[in-house]
Image (cartoon, rainbow, N blue to C red; front, side, top):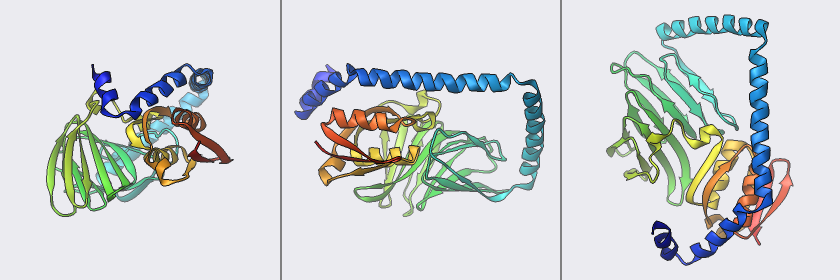
Length: 295
């Protein structure tokens, strides 16, 4: 029933569904899936082999002990001004001196200020935050004049361009956050909800698939998920996550709506699937550069 209603809502969706079904049966897609599983199995085997080396494990244990001492000292010293930079690829969590964890998407960075009265992070780009509870020191993320404040929670903050200008999107996985715009408008956002701040206005919405049921955002696990997002946004997210640049030829191409889940560690496969599904032409322009144009 929900599928029928979705198809009736827009006439072009019937054709899109047929192309999607054809894509699922495509041998190239199955081959890409096998390649992805093989690559991941190879990485796992390397990790297991690495940990079986006794001398290396012992050395690593000594290094971890040193790191633990460093973290304890860091908490006492309350470091200020530490800068973290995200790089393309699946991000590893970075543990701050207060026990909170930060994951940064590619082309993103955050400056950390841990003080005696508050914990303040200045973000550019996108980051996922798992906050260690400390009621005496609120944990806040500032981006584009928007402040997101939480105590003991998990949330994602994304700074991006939109049709109406700069926008900040906050998605709450667990707990509660307060979102305050640069104009002073404030709104409380709970797990399973998101807030979008644009032009000083904060708007709250429930998620189609509550993120509270997952552990971390899909981008932090090597996947990009879209629900009728513009191809322009898909290209921006893919570039940030993988480092691959995608040139879109024409405003109509940028506006094409894309839905699906794509592995960004094999960006060419993702782009081929999108181009085929929407009847577009994908052209390789260099090692890390592609062009998508009308068929």
